[in-house]
Each structure stands twice: as structure tokens, then as C-alpha cells.
Length: 160
Image 1 (cartoon, rainbow, N blue to C red):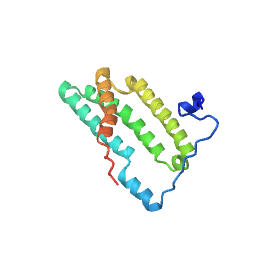
Image 2: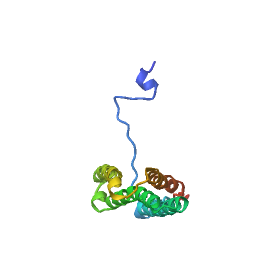
Image 3: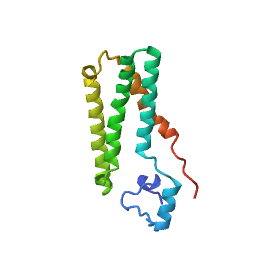
Image 4: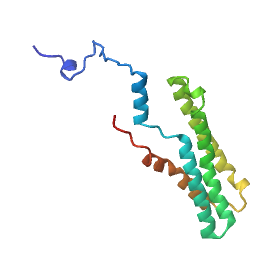
């Protein structure tokens, strides 16, 4: 007896696949949370602040111009301020009501983060005298790279 193509390839379109869902006890859920700790978004924002300060001081020191230092600092702030808004939005009570509001909140706060970053860069020439676009982009670039460093430094999951 030959199987039809859907069953032969392991697909059964007529019968729903039943998966057994096992609920965790409170102790098991706590052990799971402790074995894979989450990275706080505030830790990432703090790392970005340190990187922004370092790049601004380095730009000022290398160039000898305060305007270049302020340009680099403003570039870093164009990342840090929106990231702080994003972190605040994600850690608010509204974003943790249920999975749907958490997912919606993520996209709303990401859109706000992008809009604030773009607005800050657009008004930079009006706010910074003798703006150095190269220094601004350096501050922006270095501060953005802290997301990758945070991923590399993320706590490793513990074996249960």
C-alpha cells in the first residue's frame, strides 16, 4: 500500500498535530529564569554612555577642537537618548500586560527610537556650532556598536 505524497514526506494535512504542553511549577520556572538571565536594556544604555563619553573625549583630544568633541558627543547622544526612551518603554507596566501588547509596544518604541534619532541628526547643524559631520558620525557609529558588544558580553546560560 503506497502512501500519498503528503504522508510520504511527513506532512499530514488532514490531521492536526497534537503536542503535549507541560506546565512548569513555580520552582521550575524560577530555575529556568536563573539558568538563562536576561540582559537589562539599561546595562546596554550605560555601556553606550561610556562609549559616547570615550569617543567624545578622544575626538576632542586628537583634534584639539572643542567643536569636534561636542560633535562626537552629540552623535553619541543621538543614539543614547532614543535607546533610553526605548528601554523605558519596554520596561513599563503597559508593555508587560500580555504577549500582544509586548510585541506591539516593541514596534511602537522602535519607531519612536528611530524618529527621535533622525530628528536629532536633522537638527544637529542648528544646535552645534562648527559641526563636524565626521566626528558626529564617529560618535554615532561607536555608540551603535555597543549593541554588538552587549550581545557578546551577555551572561551565558547555566546548565540545569
